[in-house]
Length: 230
Length: 230
DNA sequence: AATATTTGTCATGAATATGTCACATTGAAG
DNA sequence: CTTCAATGTGACATATTCATGACAAATATT
Image (cartoon, rainbow over all chains, first blue to last red; front, top):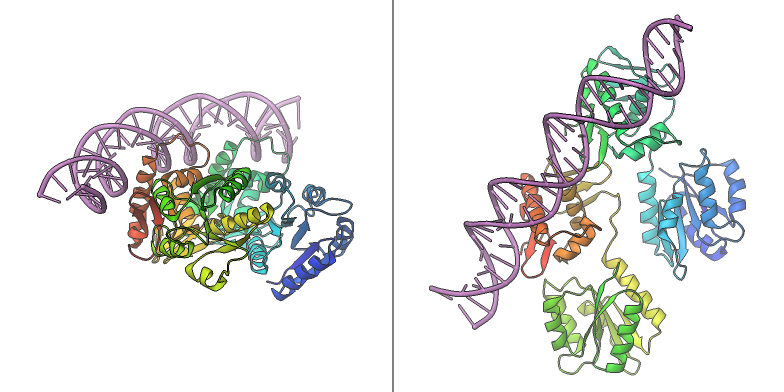
């Protein structure tokens, strides 16, 4: 459960405070006084979470966040923005760039830790090449095969990625746009409704092993893979 | 984000100053020259926060605060005490009665606004994706599931948001328009009474786990989620 | 090149959710 | 105990969301 947390903060005292907090919460703190330093640090170790000061000398927090989110290697790293009370922090712009949360200084340690915990928990597991098994379904990314109840399930490429994602993030509800992001990838000139169709195709394919209602629709929210009934 | 703030202050000049500050901070100021006036005002609108002068003609600030805190309808309203520098303000007694913060006159507008902001933020926790548990009910936004007493509770989208909001802000009374703001969001072309219907639907759904009277109605004011009985 | 597979989009009908009304109940003030 | 306003409740028309089959364009396979 311990995670690597990168603190990007130019004020030494505050950086120290943050690092202390993180350490006491059982995590490992990496420190950087600027975005530039952060970047070189990240060549060594990729952190699980970044605490990013809004105001930074050189590359600003906003810019840095944008840069991180545009690189597929670092895109998935959650970011918590730090803003001073006086700063007019534009929450919209912050979230737009992909910040997952933000905390205003001065912050209470409790609040900070709560948010760190929340963000880390929320973090979606990454799809790997490891075989994965959920609810009697087995998917092997390397051989590109799916089996359930002794039956082999035949899937198109998109359905395969879709199922892989669902199995990696089981139980969780995903909106159509989240699915487009995660399964379709970046260039999404695709209609939301298209997801529906692929869901149907996936369900259809899964029915050969009786797993047809593994993929559930949550009205008004999205879709979910769950073994529990609805 | 804008809140109704009730200013109870007998000195007109100071009251004016306070109201000005509040308005400029984007909130709505209600004014009362005495606790008595404040009370009758509150029959109309329940404020989100009360700025209460320590020294008042008639009912004193302390008494008024105590009275407010002993009434279940007003209990949850945060109070910021205003004290003159000369006054021997007993912080202990003030906090004892339930004042959330206090400010000494003369105050700086910045400080006042900062405290108002802080109290308001503390008051209305923002809804997050974290699972919440209240009174044996468990709601998980990520899986979009609600359970109570081993039972799964089935909710429509609106009822889900409604319950989520109630659980996030438990024990507090919410007027119908507040609920429309927070749960329905922008499209407030909706009748107040519509809330009633959704409350009923929510109660109905909650009854499968025996939590039917978790949502209580406060006559003349609104609704509240509370585990304690009425 | 011919053929098969995959993919995105649309149209349509079915399922579900939503807002409002009319009327029944309830509660509080006098 | 009346009376009146506030709230509960069932019904219903409308709006929204979703499932599904068809289809043409794009892509891969032979």
